[in-house]
Image (cartoon, rainbow, N blue to C red):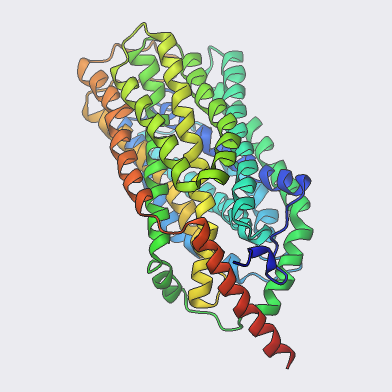
Length: 477
């Protein structure tokens, strides 16, 4: 069988280390911002801005309603962008600085009442999410433009998520340092943290653009030569995308994986502080243990994937993660060492939640190209980015809503930590164990039925090769 490397003009040869490094750097800033929002924003709202948990969770959920419209539209627009920088890079260039500014503004506490704060944070969140989409969605859509090789894409995503997890770790280390530097001023703690991380988040986006520009421009020239001129209406594109059965499996796998991630990340601060009776620094250290393990395992799973395939790797990682979630539910105060062991085990699974769905989506895009004759990375990646944000919003909303219903007592900046009722502690334990466990099991079921294997992907590329050769011959005649 012909290999995908036979495709004329296709970028299937090995990518250089500098290209992979530059591409990976593009996810550093979004990872820093997303991790800080996922870990600290809910507890910032309840313990610093003094918002009720239900209102705090609602802010995150409502702000994502705009993303339901914003993400697919930006994806489609980036597909249709024409410039000397290609289709994706202009969005990253012009969106990076506003992305940093509005991230910082989310950590400011204006002197408003509850509803004034509610509307302030809604507005800032909506604008920030718009610019997050403008830089991150076109960035994610670069993957199939850099290489069409099945295994090379897994390798490329290893670099991406190495930077992503490193960004998450860096954000937590900065949080430990900065929060510790202003122990008696919670409001200052968070705006300093927001300002520092905003600057660090913007700069690597320009590194990514600079380091991948030549590769992207070459791919864009080849794409224009063989692509069709006609474009489908947006509604028709969505209809075709959602008739792609492998795509439905991928988004289901991804939604389940990230819903489990975000639910656990959102509740861990409350679990460590209120159930285990430990400090703010302790819950940050727990999340660092998860992220460091995930970073190391990315490269292990990438190597294993070349031998056994993406589905098998996903099953391995999820099984270990499920064991960790059960252990967290059964964990008792005082079992500090076991808590860190379980955090390491969770990192095995979290790394596959990063790596595998994003390695599957380029294969789905090529199946769509075979069926429709169009390359529509932006549409597919738009829904992937949307699902990541939806999982974050749902996770934060569920945690906030359940805590409020359970009688959780919020505290304001500078106030002593209240003693939580037994109902709130029980709710925290359910949220850290059985809740993510349920969605992980659903994700495993979906992964079992995912149909695109390495062999099927090679057949798809072979058929695309034949079509492109026919288009080239027709254009020359």
